[in-house]
Amino acid sequence: MMEVLLLFFLATIIVATSNGYHVEIPYQIHLLRPQTGAGGHHVHGLSCLSWRLGVETNNIIGWTTVPQACEGYVGHYMLGHQYRKDWKVVANAACLYAQGLNLTGDGKDIWVFDVDETTLSNLPYYADHGFGAEVYNSTLFNAWVLTGKAPALPESLKLYQKLLSLGIKVVFITGRSEDQRNVTETNLKNVGFHTWKKLILKQSSESGTTAVVYKSSKRKELEAKGYRIVGNIGDQWSDLLGTHVGNRTFKAPDPMYYIS
Ligand SMILES: *[C@@H]1O[C@H](CO)[C@@H](O)[C@H](O)[C@H]1NC(C)=O
Ligand SMILES: *[C@@H]1O[C@H](CO)[C@@H](O)[C@H](O)[C@H]1NC(C)=O
Ligand SMILES: *[C@@H]1O[C@H](CO)[C@@H](O)[C@H](O)[C@H]1NC(C)=O
Ligand SMILES: *[C@@H]1O[C@H](CO)[C@@H](O)[C@H](O)[C@H]1NC(C)=O
Ligand SMILES: [Mg+2]
Image 1 (cartoon, rainbow, N blue to C red):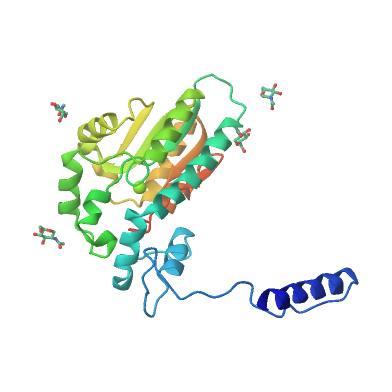
Image 2: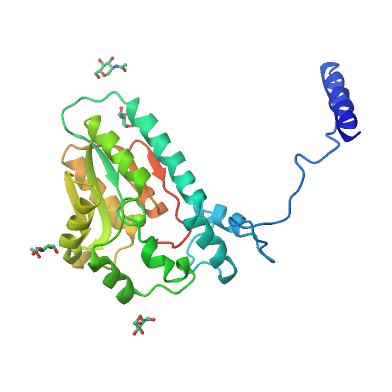
């Protein structure tokens, strides 16, 4: 009975439209479902999905922690399929773009990668620290970095391999400090990122600068040396905004923290 009614409605609209009449769409665009989180559980009072969308689109900025009510939501998102699916979409788009480039082959075409949550995943750490709902503790986080045990983000590794096969060189620009160079190099190599043109870490003299200023200035230096930044990928908008951002930027998913 419902189907018949719906068909009748649709037929009426099609006829009305083809006659040039303006018609009001008399029903919702889609049936509403109960508000659920990534794990299918009900979230009270706050749409964590809307919050995550706001964060990923850089509409919500300057936040320090994931809202307490969204800790479970973000945890399910990060550990479930959705985070990986979202990563696949980003990495596939980047691969398609890279394949279509008309490169000179002079070794000056580079792709900028951020490190944390872009090439290396700190999910083992964040899983123990509320997925970003706990206040950031640099002592604890740096101790984790020094273990050198961060796994690769698999989709990022695929993109990296694809770019190398196309003759694009990789440059890492990270907010990690210069004294973490060794552990970062070892960690990257251990998980499959074997080669790069440059690994740029933050000098102690730069520790006061925001990521957006620091990374812009590093990219400017690269371009001054004759490199062409054909692509740039990062999990933070501060990896992708500012100046000399490259021909195309790709935003990797990360609802766990915000860096300006
Ligand atoms: C690729 O670049 C070269 C050199 O700039 C140019 O001659 C050629 O037409 C380009 N090819 C395409 C498909 O854009
Ligand atoms: C960070 O964690 C350490 C070790 O648990 C603790 O001693 C310290 O007070 C924490 N720092 C902050 C700012 O919470
Ligand atoms: C770098 O780290 C590796 C592995 O932990 C270690 O064997 C090596 O001695 C370190 N090198 C320096 C210069 O600290
Ligand atoms: C990158 O952008 C520059 C400046 O807009 C342009 O001249 C160049 O052709 C672009 N390179 C590629 C590979 O699209
Ligand atoms: Mg990052």
